[in-house]
Image: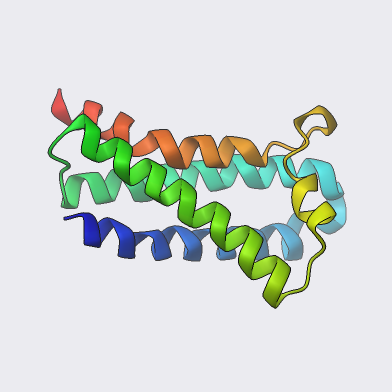
Length: 129
């Protein structure tokens, strides 16, 4: 079962790419960087929620600990991809990558990471009832 959830992370990646393209091409030119970032985070969390709900229905998790393992695995894969791919492949400086983690400046990317981590557990609990 876990291998299906590892592979399903690529579905989360696909959603993130589409969400980022939507942001950059559709509303960022009109709303600016910060507001577009915040809207994109809200949209991403919503789309991730639907996708994770679908996965939890298709491949029900067997325990709370399994759900937490998947959440932390997705968190690790997401952060590793973000920093390794964007820094070493796209050559984005560390300072720019870390900028989205500055919640004091209104950057709320961290909410996506929190959601990816806790959503499997929440869906397991929801499906259990």
